[in-house]
Image (cartoon, rainbow, N blue to C red; front, side, top):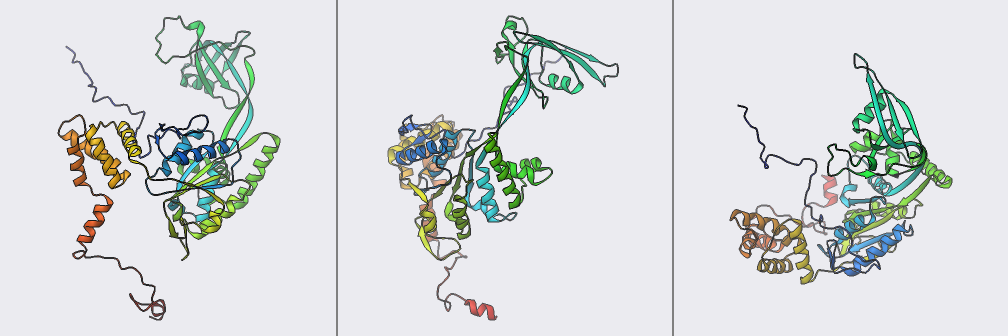
Length: 472
């Protein structure tokens, strides 16, 4: 008797999709209505009404192509939703408008200069929509005949294809047969063949075959048989960024460098040639420039050289909308001893529109915690929700959100379905917040071995002076 082999449900895993819950994975847009008025709780966004409305107005101008070459600064205390608003803007813009997000620290790379890293980020944020006409064959497959040789090395065949008005037979070569086999094309399918590339796309099954008694999946799509001629001319639109064009043209295997990420430095002469070519295409009507958005997080981490480069880059003809975020007040500009608001030079601050974000109210914090609980699939009891909201008020919102998954682990250990106040208290004792950590450091200061000494302005105090160091 044959042994029956079974696979339990725990052994079967879906490996096609990878889901990771990130800090802002709940954000799906800016949560504005048609008149750009912020809703109270929508698309994962809560509170910050003025900042969200300002972001919505900026987006409207980006979509109309009015605001390219300008800069906007989101300024506010930590954990007030600056990055969340930027991600909401990216979701609202959609796939067609390029959105590049970098942290200011990414600019300081060993492989390329600061200005090159900023240039690449800027050019990644400018899209070029290229239009070209291609010839296609579109119709319903009536019959496919494939003849193989005795050795199986060569394959020949015939494809009968029809529209409502006409029917044609095409001779097939080996490559075309392989392309049709790869797409699993059968009689009754509606297909499109691109004559230039030989790419085969299957649109669906014909309605005339909907009553066939063959095995069909639930996702089988039925479409009407096309009208008119089988061979047609069709306009195809490609959207690429200027950076992608730069990389592909900078080396022989440019497209491989694009996937590997090893782009290296690109010569300015090549960029000028590409700009000239894109301008020609634009005049001929072949291409259209789409100014996108470059978001620079923690912008105060850039130094004075980067800021002066940004000043010049913003005035360039091909420049995107630059959105910056900073949580600093009066701060020293990197590379200088000058203190300036938000850590930005005054001449750059003069060019930017500043949008301020404010600290969340207790009701807003409670709604954000509820949204994060739904995202992480955790259920809090009403008492635990109130306790966590008060924790967020006394510590920080980020700390309170981090406690959700920790408390969930503790509740699972005691086999409880919901997270209770006791689970939160235990997680609170296991993990310190910033205020308690500082307090602990102050208490332990006497027994700590290593302690950093602040550098003194007076050259005679706190060690050897610069002059002494040179002499020794």
